[in-house]
Length: 94
Image (cartoon, rainbow, N blue to C red):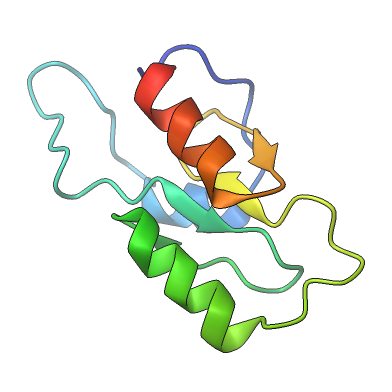
């Protein structure tokens, strides 16, 4: 699931995973926060899609002009989506 993503340039993920390598020995799915907000200036991420959904609803009610506000926050992944369903599918199938 974590190996199929493109290179990463999102500063929030760099900080979140700094000095951490996800390997078979230390991978903890409960600590991973793959659901990221891609609204400019907002680098929050969540462990569950519902957290990102409510974050967007409460903090960014108008997404006008933002083509793909839902981003994958897994290290080395730059994928972004128009809606949360696309991100959910990516995380489930990648």
